[in-house]
Length: 87
Image (cartoon, rainbow, N blue to C red; front, side):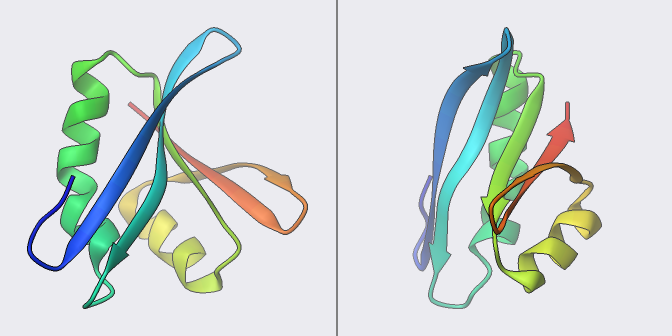
């Protein structure tokens, strides 16, 4: 997904038999790529009957944003927190 100043890359996966759409990368000039593309990412995940939308981060600011958007901490791997939103 892209617009004039940001982009978002989604990665479909199967984890333990569940369809998961992973937000693999999001970047924007204004620092708002996740917020800008979140509604479309959610619609696309629902359209393919995914069970979860997820992303990994080590950034404290994204941990705060994740909670505000409705994501839940799923697990950690090293320094990464993996956030999931049930769909």
